[in-house]
Image 1 (cartoon, rainbow, N blue to C red):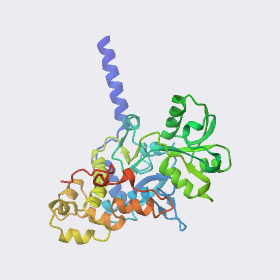
Image 2 (image 1 turned 90 degrees about the vertical axis):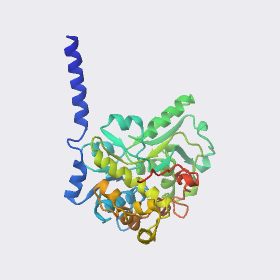
Image 3 (image 1 turned 120 degrees about the horizontal axis):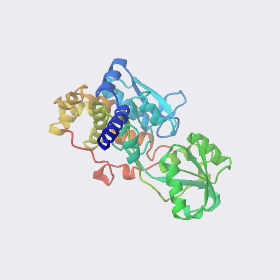
Image 4 (image 1 turned 180 degrees about the vertical axis):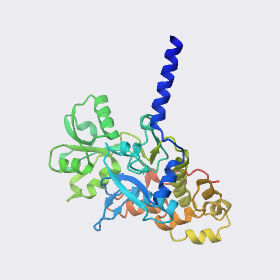
Length: 342
């Protein structure tokens, strides 16, 4: 009886995990190539990461990460379909096959990585939870917000981070949950809540879109680690590898000084073996991923290296106005340390 029970339990666990994985490794890349279009999950709308411009064209760091991946696959930045997703629907959409990859301000956490039938790949943006308050309110730190009503977006890590902070400080607070960031911001501006809690970059993005940004203060404290990175479905190692090394190549290109202006020239003139390998002069990287040998040249020409993408959408010269900080390369004191591409 005990043996039969153990065998039945093992079979049930195997069935559960099997159901969470794609039926065939490599199926995602094959399906994308057959379709001729990458389907990329993005935010429903947050400046700096993903927001339609006046012509209705999506712009932002996450958007360019999607476009660059389409270039790696097809050498054509237009061969991507953007699927805007809320925080509460993003992982379900990926797991069901509605999208191929998720580039959507999504924090890598252990429980997401091991329990959702998905895989977190590699961080491309480091952030931390913060709070925004009305500048005229006199609040200078979170510990002064006891009894506050706080707007939060449901389905995010920010719900848990906020609850954990106020619980450990033994401070009461009232959460008000919203499906989308714009709804939370509207409630904040309407006076329905005293603060908005989310990642600092998104607070900066939201503040930049307000009628009078100076009326709002982002408190200086950070209460969590929020490494954003792409997610794919579990069980398809070929697709996992391609997305992982695509992100890594954007960091490697920046470290080696490969830019949108010189990528093609460096591919022809560089004598550095690692740079020549990166840019497809020797073809083994593209061959290993089953894409063009010059995929990195194509990507950087189209969207830039990581630094160019960051500066275009998040940097000091934009409305968001965020210095690189920990999102710098490791050679400049940041956390981005590209793995060797050899």
